[in-house]
Length: 308
Image 1 (cartoon, rainbow, N blue to C red):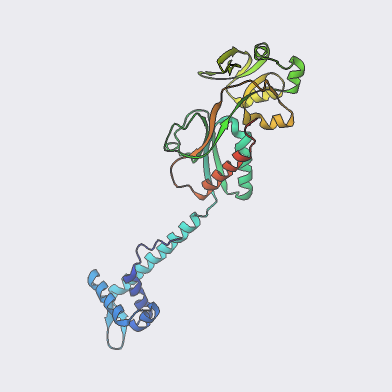
Image 2: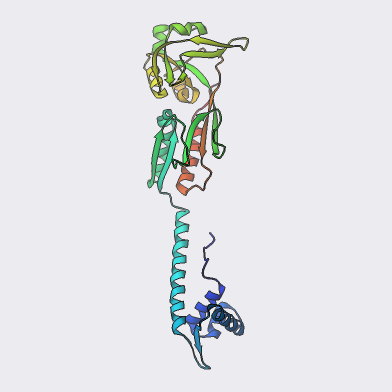
């Protein structure tokens, strides 16, 4: 790491060496300089400052009153400089402080909480402030360090993209649901089955959009028996066998693998979902934020996204 040393320049270093050793010859030997060169540098410093720093005789060298004051001030500055260097060096490796994250609400148990557990197991001094919010937020104005959002593409071109994941949409139901209602054999069967549907303001998935066998866009009105603005709740209702639902693949991949959910109409061509983005503002990251960023990237890669 480069030191700050913005004030203690060469002429001042020469002065300190002479003042502490009381001799031009000893100071020159310490600095590996010629004594006459060192003497000229001190005289030039005195001329620039407009004060006499040393009283010189043929046998002795002593600080003047002004030289003594100047020496004490330089030592104070040098001490402060060392403290600043120590602070910067420690700050560059400081794994503590609060990391502020904003994310879509449904990623709490899937991504955020497992990441926090892993990070704090290694660095317990890192604290987290997480805002679960599906609304748009200004990362800079609200001082967020990191954001995970579901977008077609980031709205703010100044954001740094750390990771992105393409997302598929799938239809799923529990084994109990299928035992009770049977598995749909064609897309039209869905309109007779109870569905859990996402609804939040102008966004309403009560109508299923898909492509038919000729690749033409089609729409099908669903039997929405449960509507909610929280996809976690929709997933829970599906796991409990109340309804089937349309979900992002990363939300249900583990449940499909364990058999808690079964995919419906796997050949049905559903439109792609908006992309999952991990972004941060264009600024220098603290060590703690940089570590959490890497932990989130690793977690995203480890999470089984994408269903063939």
